Length: 119
Image (cartoon, rainbow, N blue to C red):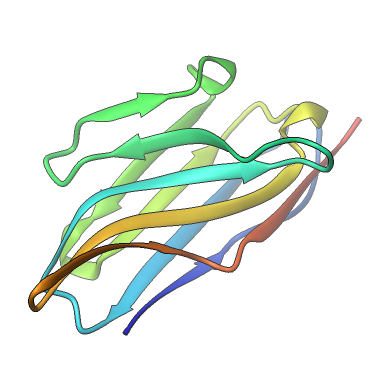
């Protein structure tokens, strides 16, 4: 079984910064892509940023230039540095990982962490 544990959410004023972390644990052989998604009230979950095992990244247009995704493969951890936060960034942020375990490949999700940006 694989677990993803997120941390770093909270309340911040517009223009501020937060850093989210997500650590994967369990019986992991290796991890392919990792990413961050978010879901605001009344909206669908959307991709914020993703990173491959080789370090290639992609971002939603709404966060380009403000957010940076990175990962530490040795720690099975992915980070999301969020700068110049806006009220519209308010959402529950979810970590996602495409994980290879022995004989199986599956998608895993964290429990979510709340990010609230006040104006």
